[in-house]
Image 1 (spheres, rainbow, N blue to C red):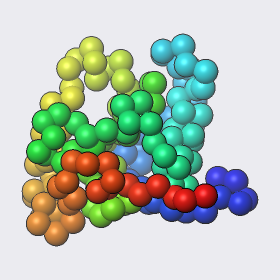
Image 2: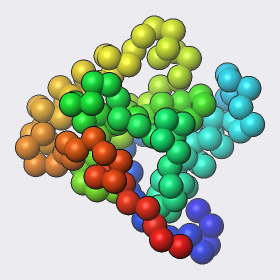
Image 3: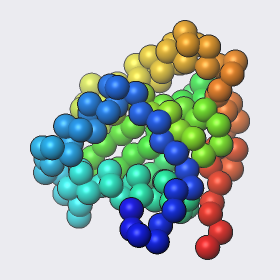
Image 4: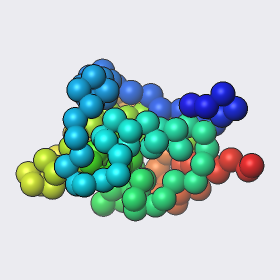
Length: 145
């Protein structure tokens, strides 16, 4: 983040997600979708926008997965997907990250959604720290500049 940028939202990352992100940072692989930015640069920009409270582009950077009643959310770049849920407004719990092409090719969306739902239930987060509303303004606020 830049010197004048402040933290507005928070991303909590599981160990699995941390390992995935570290691999992207260290190896800085090329884009698989002919994007203007490398996957590492895509992640930096997505996280910068998220953390500083800028508006996320629904569909391109952020959306609720289907079916919407599971409260699983997806942060995304052209190359990468990060799956998790909001533990409170402006607080995202990222659990898994993967390559968009791999997810699409192997049809992994439902598997990630179901595994996150299972883990959230197992740790008791369904009752204590999960935002169930599907509207964007229930999970993210936009910083007034």
